[in-house]
Amino acid sequence: MERKMLDMLACPKCHGDIEEKGMFLLCRKCSLAYPVLEGDIPDMLLEDAWNLSDAEKNGFKHDNSL
Ligand SMILES: [Zn+2]
Figure 1: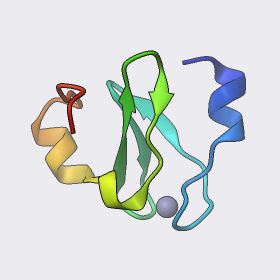
Figure 2: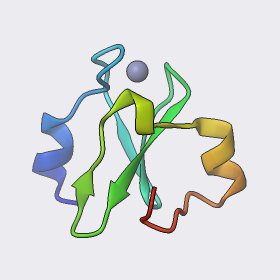
Figure 3: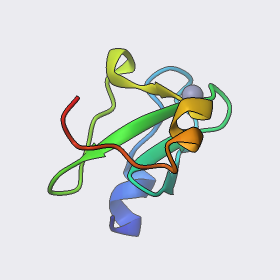
């Protein structure tokens, strides 16, 4: 994902910084991982977010179909 786009995004829960990791955008503060969908589209919906530990167990991968 482009750095510029990443800078524009914030965690919808705490409005903090997020970091890109594998197929997710992470908020370390909330321990949440937001999936990035096909076409570099970040899914920043809280209800779609994974627990950070689950994403880590999955190798920061998901199959794009939520
Ligand atoms: Zn957060």
